Amino acid sequence: MKKLLIALAVGASAFALPAAHAQQSPVAIDDNLESKVIEWRRHVHANPELSNREYETAKYITQHLESLGLEVKTGIAHTGVAALLKGNGDGPTVALRADIDALPVTEQTDVPFKSTVTSTYRGNEVGVMHACGHDTHVAMLMGAAEQLVAMQDELNGNVLFIFQPAEEGAPGGEEGGAELMLEEGLFSDVFPGYTPERVFGIHVWAGMPTGHIGYRKGPLMASSDQFEITVKGRQTHGSRPWGGVDPIVTSAQIINSAQTIISRQTNITKAPAVLSFGIVEGGVRNNIIPDEVTLIGTIRNFDMDIRADIHDKLEHTAKHVAQANGAEADVEIDLGYPVTVNNPDLVDQMLPITKAVAGDKAVKEVPLVTGAEDFSYYALEVPGMFVFLGVTPPDQDMDQAPSNHSPHFFADEDALRTGVNLYVNWALESFK
Image (cartoon, rainbow, N blue to C red; front, top):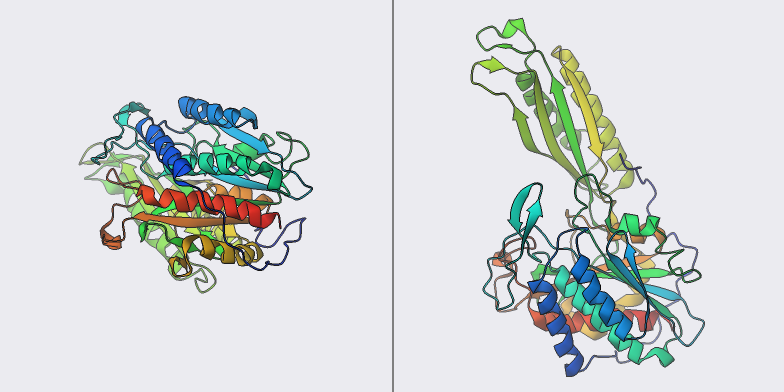
């Protein structure tokens, strides 16, 4: 079980954030670079790879970064790629991050570059698709690298480009993603002396119009934990329930009692929380009360202290309800991603340039999102800013747009220019 992270790095950093400067016109990429970004996106989209298996994607990214003359490191957290751009001054190092893995989803769009790739996932043959938009993230960061390299002599600081595998989660029995990249020295040993002072990330989002930006100070996305409860009874014939201990009835009581953890025992005025059961497995025949039942579910939360308290209460509830029924309950909680927290000072500093890039009316504060992101690990190390970039054409109904992870997910390529410009201008603003 992973170590529970308790402290949030909302405002914690060894480096002070400078005050916002008077805003100048943002740098914008030209049509030629935008065409390249679209080409890169389509290539990556047509050739998706699952988490920790992004071998060809990593090669494709590496070839581009090396062609720009950057110092490139590969094989971080299995397939991760990082590159360092050294500027022409003594300013800070800024990290820009994109995730590169795809999902076990069979694509059902009609784009000409749709994925027909198949692979094996949990022992089954599956389609593979960039159904969450990581292909666009890769292309936008490749474009930002090219633009910033062209401006190298003007940079009063350095840029660390991070192309991260396994954001969707490493395969069973493996480690991966942001946490492993950091464990392998991404912010320390990979490029010694170039620890970033801040980190930026973008995620395309189906629920907003193309080019619109959604931001939030403080907690943005939830922590995500999986729990598994094994309820152990004693098998008996269904006609003689008194001859055994019924784990099915016990499980039903655990499920019902666990709902009061959020509704009656958690201060939801401090931060929302969700506890949901997604799998209930047990039994082999209609007239046999089985020995065991397995319950599997998820916990989502926006406060790390409340997160720990929910874990304790779930274990307490399951064990004592089982005991009251003469059964036993084993509880395992697999800690997933921490809360994704945007540093408020960094957001304040970057809001003017963000609005200059996307347009003042296109930048809006968004509600909390119960999805999770392992960008959270970077933002626990240094101040971070993570935003959503709308990719649904504005003439469509946002509520009806296929969501991220859908086989029908569609990302409007007109948004890519905005994403590249954001990465570039966030870096430039950091060097002032």
